[in-house]
Image (cartoon, rainbow, N blue to C red; front, side, top):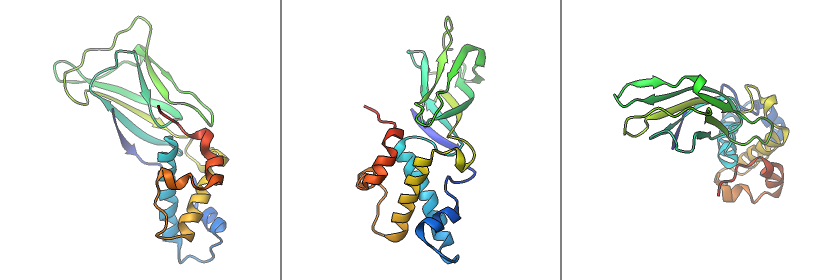
Length: 196
């Protein structure tokens, strides 16, 4: 299963002034650098948590509908499913009727992945035997504004931004480096989606 970003977040979960206050920065000489660090920290955090922070639109592509009757959607929390499209056996793109499936969108700060679940008594349509025959477009993230993101995650982002700002060139944003900061780990462990 491949996933593709369709529409990036319209804003970041940390605004420039919050980052400047946290890093104790006066003036505007470092504004562009801090803006970049805010975006980098958000992207790194989303990768670390395997979760979307601010509302954004994604697509997943599969070669066929799953035999198990459900499609798991990454990057919780799920806000909505825009559409489920597929290539039929004749090679034409079709939109699956929403009456054939139910969207399970767990809510809350630690929500798990959302799902598209085939309704009882229904069957997935046949698809053409080709890569990426099924596409699900969905909106995920806590909400459109930074206030929707849990405070613990925003605090973790501020720790990252401060560390990146104070130690330029030293940090590499990898899982191994992030968890060396025990405060960071303490703030965020319950939000991580861990796969086995």
